[in-house]
Image (cartoon, rainbow, N blue to C red; front, side):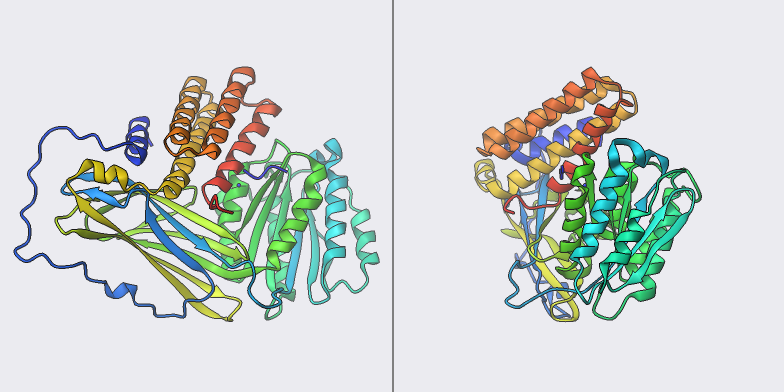
Length: 474
C-alpha cells in the first residue's frame, strides 16, 4: 500500500525566503520608535476557557528572528500530537459501516474478491460492543448487512460471499444509505465511522461533488466520520480525498487490490483509538502578520488568519499544519507572530477541550542573526511540504495537458528539495527529490490518461497528503 492522501514567481520568492538569507534591495525609512517601548502584552485570547485535554500543541517559525521594518515570508509550523500511551486501557467501541463499490469495473484484477475478503476479515476483527454494516452500490445502493453486533459472523460471511459486481457508480446513494445504517444504530460512547471504497468515478444518481461534500460535512457534524479508500487508477482522487477531509477521516490510495485487507484493518484500528473528535485549528495573526496560505489542508481565511477542520485525531498521531505568512518586523525587541487555538472533544476525558500555542519572533537589523536563528527541524518540515506542494502542482499541469509546465514545476520541486537536503543535511529531502525526478520521467513516457501515469499521479498526491500533515519525527 502506498501512503504518500501560486504563481511561479511567488513560489520562487517564498522558497528563497524560507531557507536562504534574505536578499534586500533599495532603502527604506524605518518607522519612528514609540516614545516608551512596551513589552509584548499577552492578549486575552491566550487565556484558556476550556480544559487543556490530551492534545499537545506547539507553534514555531522556520526562523525565530525577523528583520525590523521589513516584510519577510516565513513558514509557521504547528504540531498537534496525541499520546500513544494514555496510561489506561483505551479502546473505543465502533459503529462501522462499509460502503463498497460493486460496479462493473470491480471485475478487473480480482478487485471485488479482495474487497469481499477485506470486508469479511473486518467482521472477524470486530469487538463484542462494536456494530457492523455493509452497503454496496452500483446503479443503486443496497443494504447487504444491516447494522448489527457480530455475535455470529457466519451469516455475515454468507451475505458478503453472495455479493456480485455490475452496473454503474452511484457513489452518493451508497454513502447516504451506508451512513443511514450507522446513524440508526449509533449508541452513546461509540465512534460512528463510514469507510467508502470505490474504484471508479461517480456516474449515476447525484454526481455533483459539492452535494457529496455537503453530505459528508453533515455526517461529521452528527458524529459520523467518513474515511475513503481509492482503488486502482480510474477513481477521482481529488474527490475521494476531499470527502475524507470534510468527513474528518482519512484517505488511502490502494494500487494493489491485495492490500485492501490491510487498509480495512488500519481503518478499524484508527477508529477504535480516537482521542479527539471534531478537531478544529484556528490560527490568529496579529497586525503586521499577513496570512498567505496553508499547505496540504483545505483551510479558510478568516478576519485574522486561518481556520481548518482536522476531524479525528488518533492515539499516537503527530499532525502538523504549515502556514506561509508574511511578517513585518516591529521596533520592539520581540513580537507576537501567531496564536493557535485547537478546539476539540476529548474522548479520554469525555469533555470539550482546547489546546493553545503561541509563536513569537525576535526583531533585529542583523542579517546574520536572522540566518543563525534557523530552526533546522522546523525548516526541514516546511521545505519538505513546500517542495512536494510544487510537485503536486506539476501533476495538475500534466493532467491539464501542459507537459512543459509540468516538467518545469517538477524540476523546481527537485531544486527546492535538493537545496534543502544540502542546507539542512536532511536525507529525507534528498529522497523526496528523487521521487520528483521519477515523476518527471512519467511525464516523458506516458500520456496523462495512461494507467501508469494515473497511478503515479495518485501516489504523488497521497504522498503529499501524508508529508504535509504528519511530523517527520513519527
